[in-house]
Length: 265
Length: 282
Image (cartoon, rainbow over all chains, first blue to last red; front, side, top):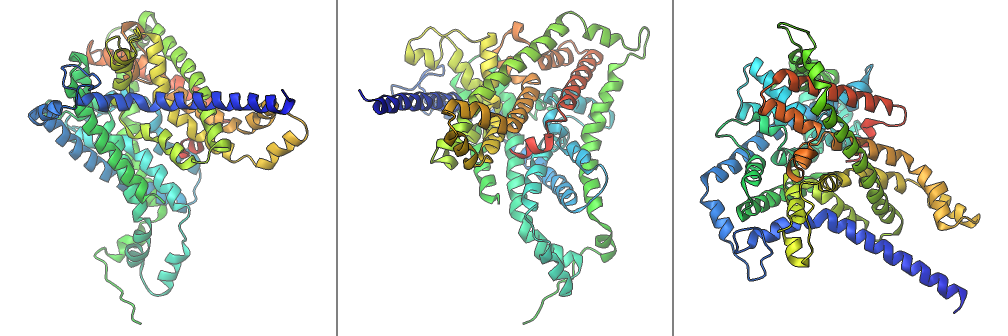
C-alpha cells in the first residue's frame, strides 16, 4: 500500500471518529427532550415509546384537569406581564448605557446582569422575604415582579447589542427638520428599535415560562405555574400526563423563541 | 411635500428632562429595588439579634452537613466544567473550521436553551431510569438515577450550550492565515491545535468555563431531579433549610456564604475574564 493512501485512510478514520463524537454530543443534547415528547403519545400508564400506535389519551386527561389548565393560564399571565416590565426597564437601561457616558459605567452595567449570576434559589428566598417586608403578596404580584427581575438581564443584553448599530444621525436629522424630541422618538427611534423590543419580549417570555427554582418560593395556593406543577408531579410518581404537559410547554417555549429570533437584528 | 408634525401627548418639560442618564437610573433602580436590596436584606436576616452570638447561624452553617454540601457543589461544578469544556471545544472546533451547515448546527446547539430545565432534566431522568424508554429500547441494564454520575451528566447537558457559543466565537475570530502559516512551517494538525489554535481561543475557553462553573455550582434542579439525598448541593440545602426546616436565619447565612464565595471566585478571574463580554455572547 502506498504511503499517501494510508495517510488518507488515517485521516478518514479520524474524520469518522470526529463525526461520531459530534453525533453523540448532539444526541446527548437533543434526545432527552425528544424522548419526553415521544413518550407523551403512549397508550400505557407510564412514559414508554409508543410502539403500538399513537394515543392522545394523556392530552385529553390534561384538558380535563382544571388545576393544570389553571397553571397554564397563570404561566401565561405571569410571563406576559413580567416580560412587559422587563422590556420597559431593560430597554430604558440599554438605551441609557449605549448613549450616555458616565463614571463606573462598566461596573454599573454589571448590576443589570446580576440576576443571571446569583443562584435562583437565593433570588427566590431573598425576594419572598423582602416582599413580605414591603407588603407585596405572594402569588401574582410576587411572581410578576420576581420574573421581571429574572428576565431583565436577557432583555438588557439583547436590546443593547441591537442598539449598537443604531444610526443616531437619523434622530439628528429629524430634530434639524423641526420635530421635537417626543415626535422624533415616536416617528424615528421607536420604529427602528421596536423589532429589538419584540425580540426582547419573547426572550423574556421564554425565560419566565420555564423558570422553576425561584418560582417555587413565590407562588401561592391557586397561582402555581406549569414548571412547578411538573416538578410536583415528578415527585409523586411518573405518569404520561407529565409528558403531555411538558410537550405543551415545549411547543409554547419554542414558538416564543422562534418569534424572538424572527425579530432579532 | 408636507411634513406632518404630530403634537405629542407628553408635555415638553417632561421629555426635555428625561436624559440618557435618567434612563440608566430607571433600569438600575428597578433591579436595585427588587434585587440588590432583597439580597442585602438576606445579610440582616442571617444575623441573630436574640440571645447568643450575632453570628450563630454562621457557626452552624460552617459545620457538618453544610460543609459537605459546599464541597460537593464545588466538586460537581468543577467536574461539570471540565466535561462541558471538552464537549464544547470539539463541537465549536468542528463548527468553526470544518462545517458547511454552521447556521443549522449552531441553532441545534441553542435549541435546548429554549426549553425549560425541568423538562430537560425530566428527559434525562427517563434516560437514566432502569424502567425508562432507553432501557426499554436497548435492553441495557441502566441504573444511573440518583447517582453522582447522573447529576454531573445532567449539569453538563444543561450548561453545554452556554459553553459552545463563547468558544465558537473565539475560534471564529482566528485568521485562517495563522493556521496555514503554522502548517506551512511544518507543524502537524495536532501541534497546530496545541500551539496555535488553543492559545488563541483561550479567552473563549475561560469565559465558557467561568459561566458554566457559576451556573453549575448554584444548580438546584439538577440534583433535585436526578440525585438522591447523597447528591444534595448547596442550593438544595438552602431550599430545604428554608422550606422544610423553616430556619430562615440559617438559610440566609448559607446564601450569604455561597454568594460571597462566588463573588470572590469571579473577582479572582477578573483580570482574564470579562463577565459582560462572556454573557454578551448568548
